[in-house]
Image (cartoon, rainbow, N blue to C red; front, side):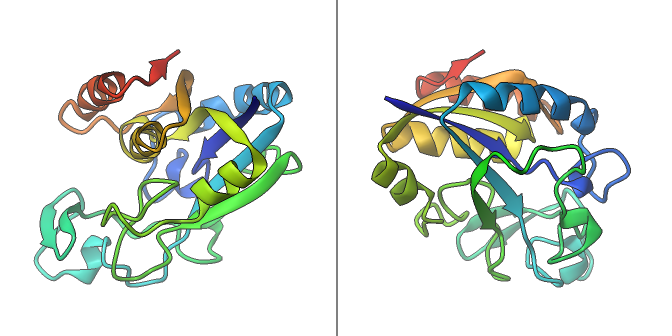
Length: 198
C-alpha cells in the first residue's frame, strides 16, 4: 500500500507578511520537509488565482474580506486578493523542499469558482485530477499537512475520505485561520467522516 504526503498551500501569501497570512504558517515548513522522507510520494497543492478572481472581496463592490456571498455554486467567503498567478505571494515558501514533489496540483485558476479542496472545486463536482493520479499510481493512504487546517486542509481531507482513501491529518504541521470557531467545526467534521487527526 503506497502512502502519499499531500502538502496543502504552503505559499508566501499564507505565511506571515502575506496577503492572507495564517498565524504561524511558516513554523511548519521545517517539519514538513522532515516528514517527506517517510513517504513514497509527495504531492504539493498551490492556490493559483487570476487577478479579479470571484472569491476576492475586491471583485464585489460594497464587500469586505470575510464577508459571505451567494455564488451559483453556493455560499462563498470573500478573501483579500491572494496567490495571484506568478506573483511572489503565490510562490511556495522558500524553505519548502520542492525536489521531493512528484506532482503539483494548482487550484482556483478558474476565475468564476474558488477551489479549497485538492480534489474538487467549490461546486463539489468539478475534479482537479488528483483522484485519478492517486488511483493510477496505486496510492490509497494519505497524510495531509499545510495551510489552513480549517479551510483547504479540511476540505481536501473530507473529500479524500469520501472518495474512499485512508486519511490522516498531521495537526502539528498545519495551522488554522480559525474564524469564529471554524477550526473546531472543521475538526469535528473531519472526525465524523473517519479522518485520523494526529
